[in-house]
Amino acid sequence: MSEVKVTAQDLPLHCPRSSDPLWARHPRVFLDPLKTGAAVCPYCGERYTFAGEMPTGHH
Image: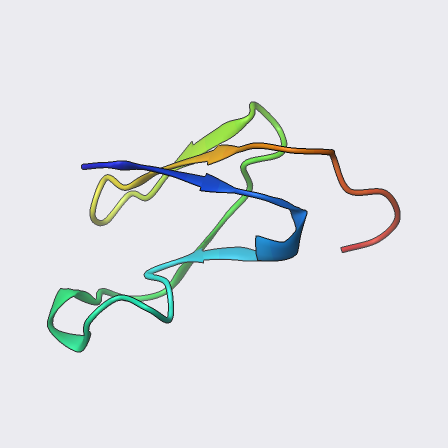
């Protein structure tokens, strides 16, 4: 799969994304790319990499 760069504006992060076509969707899973800088969806293998400033405060 491809690598998707996400920022604090994309949090909370979930896969599939709202922009994904209906035929490509699977059950929604929430991912936390902040712990290690990246997260991989267990369903489709899409890799999300956090880019930009770390968020401050509660999200």
